[in-house]
Length: 400
Image 1 (cartoon, rainbow, N blue to C red):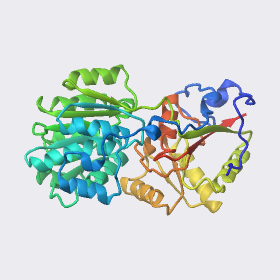
Image 2 (image 1 turned 135 degrees about the vertical axis):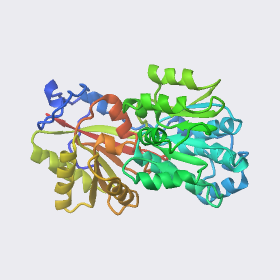
Image 3 (image 1 turned 60 degrees about the vertical axis):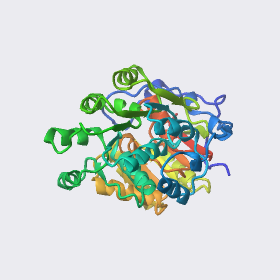
Image 4 (image 1 turned 30 degrees about the vertical axis):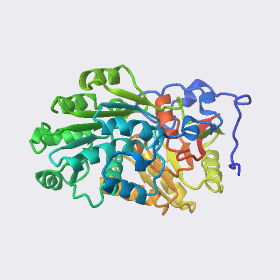
């Protein structure tokens, strides 16, 4: 069913003057990168590598512990995604792995299953998994916990916004697997509550986002404290010179698995929504949200204040909505994400920083209520829709 809003094809769009793409509304800070509105318009293509891909293995074929196979089967997984199919065998063989894949392609299982298998076979082995955001670290922890159910393995989650004393208590139990964000992990190493010299495996997930967020020095610090004799997994959607430098410094004879399908999500129908006044803008958003197709919607806005204001406006209009931004506590952010994931609310309003790492497979729409700062940010935003073989929608509001 078509959405109820005024969309413009590439041929009919009349671009506004350049200043209208720099945020507006009194937003202070660096000017946004100019992105021509035509770059927000693209038809969905379901003839992607992922859809046409015929895996060489089933999950039952992988040479991992039977307990892991049973837990994978209990989750309903039968055929691996391309990144899983190609990366897992190399991980099992002990190779360093570079995984280049779009967001939402199943990267967690691609590194988690080989790592958990080694931890089960060698109880002296240790694994460190580094993620850019609290939310992604928590999601990885949930996935690893489900894969390892009944194994007796113990883990620790090291992220900001949670009790340092509770994390220290977990670390004293000598966990086999530690998952966390670079800043909090560095804090623990400086406090000497985390010793890096025993880790035989390390994962960097969404390396490009960590570099974008300014964590490259923390990453180098953490990797530099690990033993030279280790297995490493680097997963990223993009690779630039900084990331290549990391790879050259810290990987040994890596195998590269690339299943990236394009510069944007091919399975996402991308379009623009034009408006002239703030009242017209919120009304057009309202019309989109009442459409039957808009089942689960992630909306991006620029600032904490803008996110809260929009969330309140939508709540007053009767929508089931919550919001997340950097000013909220970790508990508040987790409750909002859980409500969105479980569909107790079907609209989530977020800032870019707070939304990084969200991995919810049934998001139908990503709405850029404010334009992204860069085109890379746009790519990461819309990649949260159109997952698991579904067609997603990305709509970007443009002032005329």
